[in-house]
Length: 187
Image (cartoon, rainbow, N blue to C red; front, top):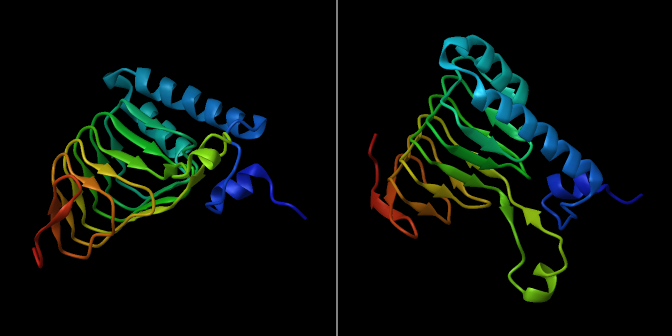
């Protein structure tokens, strides 16, 4: 039995992002986050309820400042007391797991989506993804980019503008492009 394009996507295998089922799911997510992003501040209770509908799982204390963007929403799993500031973008073709007590500054970008390095495969129109895991008690600075397949350990701090291309250990402060360890054992 062959896997569906969605099953291939979720497994991190090459898949066709233009398959009608995936296009429809992305469209549904866009319609919902566009609706959320347009809700006025005096209707925050409704906006917050819709964020819970958009995300795959979310603990209590979720606070997202719109605008917010994602591919599917259902691949985003968020723990307790998570704060995402303005302009967060999560490309969730694979699972994004975010722990408890995590803070995102404005313009944080999380990309599970990627493409093959060789041109022939890349030009096939197929793509793939790699899951991202963010531990508990993490702070991600403004404009940081978390690349496909990265895991960020508990208590880590990601500096503003960092491009995180490889795993970050617990209790480390990383910064730069590409991100490098600036300080260990910060907690």
